Length: 503
Image 1: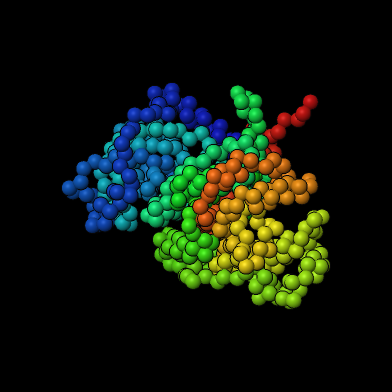
Image 2: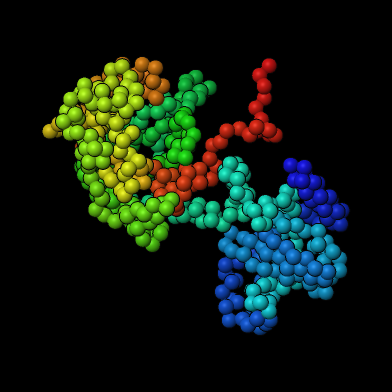
């Protein structure tokens, strides 16, 4: 820390000298630079130690990433969003005064250069600076050249530095943007309408999760940051839109982990006159296409494990997965007492009132999920744990629902939608009655949603896909924090992030 303070002090002293010499440390007069990536191809035909003969003056701007200073000359590299190039600064070309001020520049400064293109004797494309301009003086040093920014928490907390010094991080977020663009293209081309629904809701719904709560002063009412947009999107089906999707921010007041961030991005889409079987086919098509577009292959590697995303994908009912993956005797799964006993033997704590469906789901999460490496659809979720899904007409104890798992993680959740208002009301009421002290179940029933269903919602199927987890998969990122630009973190223990003590 003392060394860092000394470096900052030295930079501030340099900044003072430059300012006293008339240098604007934070200027905004160097405009319209050329992207470095557009200049690089110009050097492909240049021979070493030669200048471009028919080229003009190039105008570039960027951050200094390395610097080698000599008595009468210096080489340094600048980096813009598109690439990196070497700059050659000569005292005899720039003049004594300008060169003397230039020697007080530091790695991390943002600068502008104009000059001619040439290649050094080692064959590196460079710009010979005719003019130099300070754009922004950096008062803090970047991480050391050979060590970089490697501390994981510091990388997340200071993402702005992480992006500067780690090009692979920039590439991850470029891919994230591309994935979202492709998702929009996929659904728009299939006749889906992109919509926006409220992020502040009077009654949270559409998922089981603890919400964030706020208060609207003018209306004098509590509001909740949405945990899911589901109930509003299905209101749109009632209103006559038959294919809708939303790429949305959701908020859940839960813990932090490699898979969970309190604020996250979801894709949700709903299609009238479709079943969950239709959505399984659509999901296979979407994700395998995304993988090929982003990685060039449907066979990828995630954290050293090979994953084949080529359709068709494995499909199991929950009971079949418990038998074939977890090795549970199928006879046990028909007996509620034996299923609960098995769950307790495996260390699962069941809440009072939990039925066989809840016990099976807990066993599945414990014994099966992490073993599903290649994409696998799990269907026939118990009605007990699926309050918004349509009951299966042949077996009402389960629903027409699936979840998609890849590399042991849930990627998608979908079902044929429940559109019977009486059935929906009863399931909501029972869920609230049995909630106990479970803060993930909201104590208030969404009467307006029931009213919407009473007007008639067409038969439909809907799905939610976790964008962050999908990006993790397609960029080989081990943590959700690696694919969220500014993930939530615990407060820093010192400095500006330190909590104040209560008096």
